[in-house]
Length: 149
Image (tube, rainbow, N blue to C red; front, side):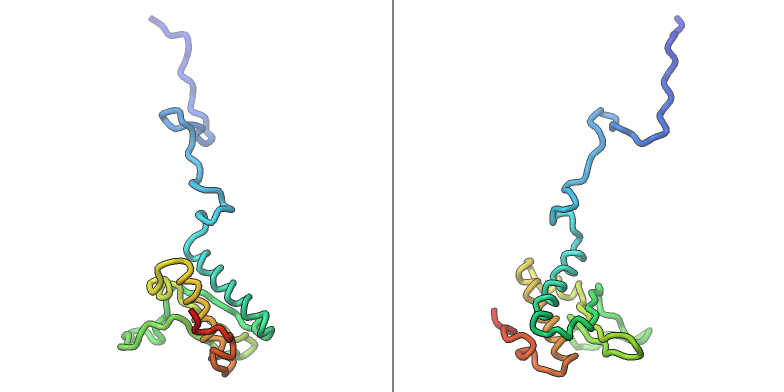
């Protein structure tokens, strides 16, 4: 028995359907929905919100770079951690044409908080403390609401 219909060759393009005929699976959420943002992006947004809040009062903060790093680095290779607590942020003074920098460490902050509101409050405290150190002021001068719950 001869089959007059030859088998169809596979198309070179992407598969339109999975083997069960249901189609390709799409993303869980569209990109504009907060669910699609990574934890690092959400954290960077919290830092940016805090900086914008402070820039209204301190316009000179536009000359400072604000960075988010995963974890603090050891200064020298082979150096061991001391008994001190892991820092939540740090400052790098301006030098040789580079602006001053404020660094917030994402993982230590995330570990110490449980929810988004608590995380946002801690991020703001860290940013205020680092800006105060950079400007040589007290945190209460930088943000009068510092330390209030």
